[in-house]
Image (cartoon, rainbow, N blue to C red; front, side):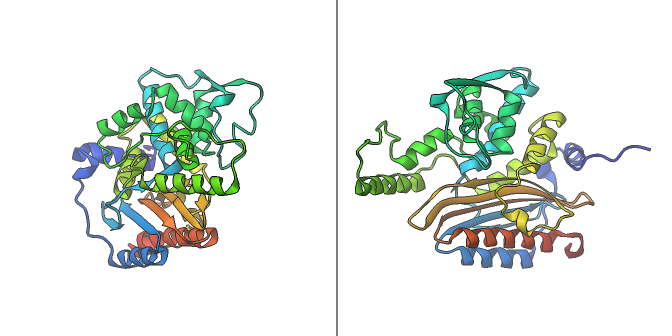
Length: 335
């Protein structure tokens, strides 16, 4: 008996037989799902919620506000990891290779206790494999910036994405660069030691406004969905590296956004992205992921919320509703 193929491998073989995943005829969007997505987008106002839902069996796409670009925050980490793993596949980088991180290269931010929180001395060494796990599964900012430096900078991630026809996604900045925009120090300035509360408030307001206007490190929901589609189909990496990246995304369970609306019998490989909030507004609150049912049916979802005035419980409830809506529309009972 021939062993059953893993879902992402089976999808890749179908794609090869048809020439490319894009060659599969697309079904029309599901009207009920479209109506639900539009209702969720209305609920998100005055923030803007952009969503693309793509059924990988039928290539039906259901979209709301999906043509514009949204700030990614940590959503950019899987594409960076994919670019690193492509270099592993090519033999240019080893998973066992050690990378030195100095204390000055530590960047705040992680979904779990970060490299920065565990940093000892002036410098530490981590393997590429350790940094990949920290960057994707734990959303560690120091780790992804170290990987970007090893790649030679964001421009080489862009070269990789363009070579695989992932258009509409820009990766121009490191997490440190983004932090400096928010801090209002992107032009090379520093924060005065004797800064007054009023001056700090004005600086942070300038930085927040600058980030919302900045076109860099942004993606359309459509482009994020294409990235997920190509990853699942095995078009971006070897089968071993595809599995490695998907496994890291399966292990990202914090924050809990769309996952909160999914039943326990589906698998979800996802990556969230979050900015900080200023005066009741959140610049970016995102989640992209791959939903797979026990029978192998697979749907990708890319959701980006920007300039939201909602508090965290309301934002989380919005994403949980989105997860449930996808399940209701694409579950075996709803197909």
